[in-house]
Image (cartoon, rainbow, N blue to C red; front, side, top):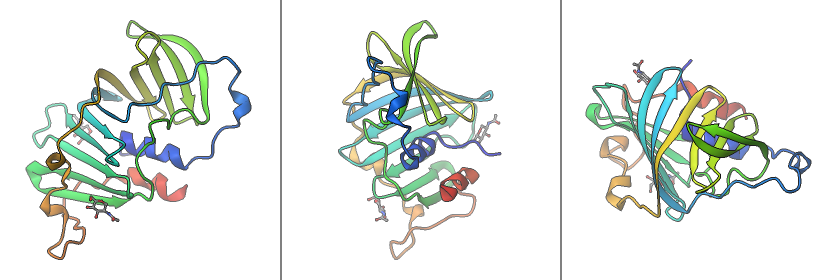
Length: 208
Ligand SMILES: *[C@@H]1O[C@H](CO)[C@@H](O)[C@H](O)[C@H]1NC(C)=O
Ligand SMILES: *[C@@H]1O[C@H](CO)[C@@H](O)[C@H](O)[C@H]1NC(C)=O
């Protein structure tokens, strides 16, 4: 099975019905909303398949970008560029390969975690004292009690993202968000190049 892309999962959460509010006890802490714009550096571990990723989240811009480098990958980096209009582009510049998807939903809202999140209590995460929430059996999310920054999140597939740095307010320049020309046809339509990163992971979207 192909690993699901992290942001694809987060987007998937938007499609799920919210858990009954009764599951949240009064007095439980709430997750801190994401800042409208940030840059995070992530170390990802998918059952031993390691990667580092830059995550650029830009809610006012309606866009979200992961730039991922798998361990020792000769064709790195791989871009996962998601827009609030529901179009996502996946491309590998070293191979001029592109795949796009109409995912049908936009990017995560800054407060995406809060509706339906179930508080699991306080746990240590690599030396950080964290509040922990689970959402819809898809994700477990660790937030530093002291600084309120995310420390790590774990997808139900076993993919773990460790947050190595979290720069609030950092914005990537416009030019870096432009999907490359090989993602488009001559007439401006969206092209699918052979060898583009086509991920079976999108299957779950279509069944929900
Ligand atoms: C890790 O996963 C990525 C994405 O599926 C893949 O391209 C890469 O080859 C994998 N790395 C290893 C060492 O298997
Ligand atoms: C969504 O926005 C991107 C970036 O501006 C654009 O390339 C794409 O064609 C748009 N998709 C739709 C369905 O409008």
